[in-house]
Image (cartoon, rainbow, N blue to C red; front, side):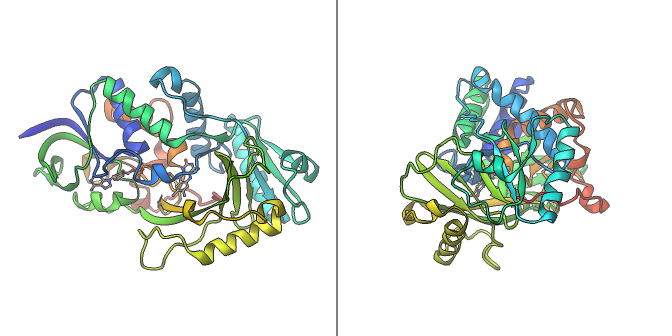
Amino acid sequence: MRTASVAVIGGGIIGASVAYHLARRGWRDVLLLDRSRTPGEGSTGKATGGFRAQYATPINVQLSLISRDKLRCFQEETGYDPGYLQAGYLWLASSQGELDVLRAAQLVQHRHGLAEATEVSPDDIGRLTPAVRLDEVIGGTFCPTDGFIRPLNLLEGYLAAAHRLGVVSEWQVKVTGLSRSPDGRVSSVQTSRGTVQVAAVVNAAGPWAAEVATWAGEDLPVTALRRQVAVTVPSEILPATMPMTIFASDGFHLRVRDGRILLLWPTPGVPGRPFDTRVDDDWIQAVVAKARQRVPKVGGLAIDRAACWAGLYEVSPDKHAILGPAPACPNLFFVNGCSGHGVMHAPALGQLLAELMSDGAAATLDVAPLRPTRFAEGRLNPVSELL
Ligand SMILES: Cc1cc2nc3c(=O)[nH]c(=O)nc-3n(C[C@H](O)[C@H](O)[C@H](O)COP(=O)(O)OP(=O)(O)OC[C@H]3O[C@@H](n4cnc5c(N)ncnc54)[C@H](O)[C@@H]3O)c2cc1C
């Protein structure tokens, strides 16, 4: 029978980062399996490429700061440009309550090393994004080192660097089951190309991770949630360096990417069909109406219907990642549930999981807030993230 030291299920940005970091720590015979034809067909290829450290909990701020350090040396490390553009993230408040939430988050950010995040007045906002109508805006927060990254460059970079260190990745291989030995450990992985005997397994299956966990009898609370993106026709009315601009009231946000403007607004998804990734015409109309009201220049642009897309977030109950060994299966490792932050946190999470699997604990950061057992313990992280 074929063998591997560790099988990584899923070759999106999370699986690629984990495989690379394991190999860098000396793991040999790392096998990465993905059912897609080519890399990037899962959520990673659907991400818009935002990067921020402006979060509301210490662990999310810290994950971003670790990732940010790693983005700065990514090219040197992998040979690929992560496309890190420090255009900033600008959060806009339309009520005192929203401003209080942003201020509370900023206190957490300052306490955990994000000194450059500041509160901004309507005048500052007018200078940062002159296109935004200010009549409903009373203030906001801004961080100049937030901005943008290129999800597929990161994915390709980690895969290429992993391959150089001996990782084998196989595409069009569907994983269909896991077998456990009497002591509860996973002993083998069943795939569409046969069985692989393994010493450990990493579940990096993105929005599909809950199914993988059930094969080991584990209940992993990760659900898929559709996110739609409306794309304008090519336009130069806004600069590429405009910050990601987010209305705290309802999560409507916009950015410029490759000469087009992307409009986003989170909605609950298709009832009863969590994996449905159709783009609704009604949703496009609604998001354009928001743009027209808040950024009139943009609202007047035509939408390129064929360029609009939708993908899946992989959401955990407290919107924080789930990292560590499965509660009843010590050699099955979860790195799931990033809740829409998986590209930006993948550099940190890959490193932290490699530390955990190699040494029994992560040395770079205390990852206890992300432990898989927190749900059964009833000790969730506060769900305070606005997006
Ligand atoms: C519209 C949109 C915008 C987003 N914007 C951002 C953003 O700005 N910044 C950010 O950080 N994040 C963003 N995200 C979230 C981000 O895309 C995800 O958090 C991230 O890509 C998750 O990576 P992953 O590797 O876990 O999942 P994926 O990329 O989905 O990879 C999982 C892989 O597992 C494979 N797989 C699943 N089951 C099996 C099986 N049984 N056998 C074999 N292979 C299997 C799949 O084929 C897939 O390739 C966005 C997401 C969407 C949808």
